Length: 342
Image: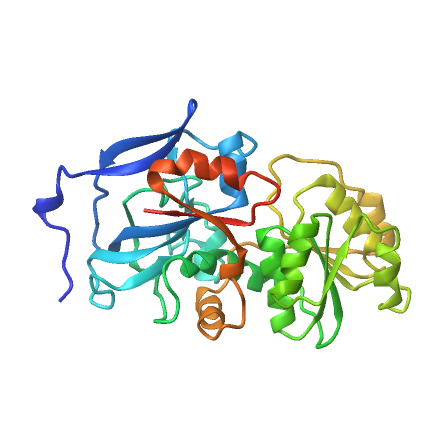
């Protein structure tokens, strides 16, 4: 049987990791309430995203204080819907939307003008409990544990990039950037049959890419790295380039590399604006494509079937009490995915 929130939890205090102007602080906060149509999740694991780090550093401005964390897994604690019983392992989408506006009614809820984003514009999952609308919640397959499950949101986002910047089977696709999202995007393209060339300068992460099955990992410190890509694209360059570095240099590299008439899929959430050569975009007739949230059901199916390797991407795991240390570690260049377990 499902349960609606009861008075027994009113006044309860839970632990939360809160970002204030003085940094991250572990604090006692009220147990989040549960409204009709909502589910309260007992949080088990939260992945640290590049956006979280940008917010923590002050590069991505948000209203503070704020509980960060949007790559969330846990078990259902209380539910107001029968489909999600207490104890069910789950993950959750991150955008809370109105369901009534033009965008929501036309299949674009992520552009809802009333949208709230967990861990960005409203409190997220770096706490013992979080309440979310039930239609955002997805049960984890039995083969996907709560640590692995934190990859659902970023993998869904990577899949959306593949969908919006489609490639033919065996077509060369270049992914710039060997961070968490670059490695997931590269694996997603590979799973859909493209010939993926992952490009970066971190030799350890390039080695990691090869170990998880990405055959072509090229170091930009090599003097002939661009020639290697031109050689496999008949000298014209790739039609699809994914910019996942989050740096001005990465975008400039993408513009230089992509063939005339090609596509640049911008995957990074940049903390600051930077100049882009509009003249170059016009001259080369480039299509710029952005993408945000993606299909959780597809991501969970790929994780369930082992089509994407994620556990090798975990650099370290921390307890909530050590959340500040976790962010310090996650900001290191050598870190890939850092997970905080509650």
